[in-house]
Length: 254
Length: 254
Image (cartoon, rainbow over all chains, first blue to last red; front, side, top):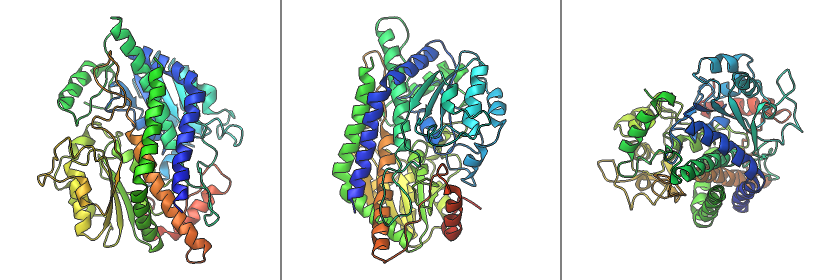
């Protein structure tokens, strides 16, 4: 029965290899936008609802991550720590929530927003991306392009998240998000979406850090503002110093 | 510069291959405990603080996941959606929080708790695992055994999470959690901990589902209680039915 455990890891590895091979160019374009936003002192936000929030949170206040990355935190939608847990999915269908939320953030023309949605078909991610572009933000969408061909949009326009982005990163997760089956189980299981989506987000950060570090080496800019781990000596003091320097674009701390 | 993006994916793939090869036996033992807990109608909880919460949330209320998996939700510690974001790390150092929290859950003798902590050295995960075992729970720890050899415990006993578990899953993440370096960057970057920890948690679920499905095929038990995706036809109705059946061990919905 542990053949299935091995198959699960193989599915995750195959999926990471596939997005590396096929999404490299899109990762590079997203990294261009992120590096430019950091260099120009723009505000940077990431949003996802329910489980799609996990990969957004993975790049915020993160050892080895960029200091000015903020979570666009919509109450009731961050992960499954909300009560009741199905609230996040329910709120994704509510029209008006995206515009109300974004209008109350300091996000403005030239800022950068990452919107993560596995299916890309719910009202919230579609409205959020569309409204952000109306306000002059750049939008990077992280979504699976397997969905638009197989399910309908829940937004009245019939559009998906992918239709409102400057750059789309395709996670290629199959509809249903289960890599495995078993004749004694009623449904597929073994989801890899968090692994793949987190890898895509981290890969964009790596690409942006590489661009900024290249410029710093040439004397064309400062070193990238990276958090150190709190588990290494001096990490906490280093992080406090960077957070003070970046205070005007950080919205996750006082 | 996108060599580093390629190296990031390679690091993630290598790491997944390594835990698959070296942690298979521990994954199997954790899957035994999880399958037994589901079959016996026990309560099942997962906890992590800050970024370690992300892999815990990844197995809760999850398409392809087990219905009776609950988040042990400690206010201020779930991910980085809290304000201020450093609160989660600060609370990890507070003694007494683990016992106060666990004592107010319905968790009891014979139930199962997953505790996720990258370093395993903070007060909260050590106290939580130790107190859970005092109460007769089984404890599975997901942590990196690279830390105990290189950093000191913050718990007065000098022990780590690993010292208070029935099964330990070693994520093997290096101290600092950054796979990459660049001469123009002040610190390492490119963390893979969420990818690897999520894979370990999902692999344990896969192993447990396989065990339950094997038994169901032999007529020795019901099919595993698995959520369907809300993006597939009938998924929502199916999930509501299972949640009603499992109501006495679900604490994330009314």
